[in-house]
Amino acid sequence: MKIILVFTYLPMGGIVIAFKEFSPFKGIWDSPWVGLKNFETYFSGTYFIRNLTNTLMINVYSLVFGFPLPIIFALLLNEVRSKSFKKSIQTISYMPHFISIVVVVGMVTTFLNPESGIINILRSALGMEKVYFLTKSEWFRPIYTLMYIWKETGFGAVIYISALAGGNQELYEACVIDGGGKWRQLLNVTLPGIASTIMVMLILRIGGMIEVGYEAIILLYQPATYPTADVISTFIYRTGLGSAQPKYSLSAAVGLVNSVVSLMLVLFSNYISKKYTETSVL
Image (cartoon, rainbow, N blue to C red; front, side):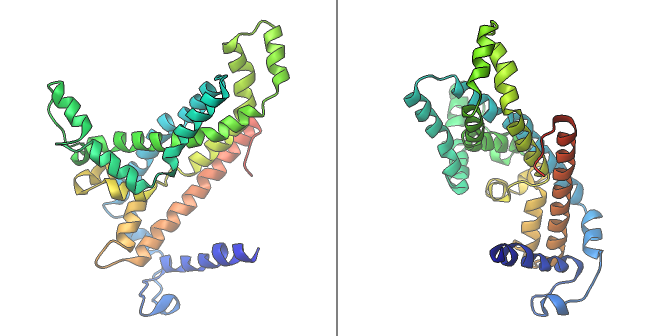
């Protein structure tokens, strides 16, 4: 309890920075109070709409294409009867999760290199023009989404594989006795059995709809791709740490808004899930 208090609740006192014109030389309490000025500055600025749109679009891409894949992969792996083959595939599939994001971005950059990247080499062999994908803003979201899917699908499937392993085998036997094939077993036994797990993961995923891991984006984007790549978290980083004249208070204000909206999304999705599926995380 003391550890939680020290490392979780006490640092929340720093939220007051968002309502001040913070100066490291004056300290938090001696810095002048400006109220909601930092929030007004961000909401009325030129970057707010762009940051919000990019954050939502990248998360929508990841939700639509990335969320179902671990479920599908777990269902397919559940049908494999060879234990050694199943364990091998599972191990290989979740290994990318443990690769440093710096290494992953380095691999993506190498593959997409306009001269020596394998993608452009294949395009050239097929008579197509080479493209420097990482400088094209329209390619950033697909590239980021594919990278996210490759890195996290296998690891995300572990939760669903565990849920499938705890399934009631008697229900499968009853379904077989009733003449149910694989498809019917999937629809009537397997999916209902992991529905609560799916809903919990969906609630948590929706709660992070305005949060994107800034590490990968900072390593992957560049000024040419800012129109589709600059998200809220990268704006917070650039404003608070990556600028010659850091604006700590503005960065803290944007981060506070981000956290509050994320909490609201979790509560809302949890309410909807509890109302219609009787599954919740609270």
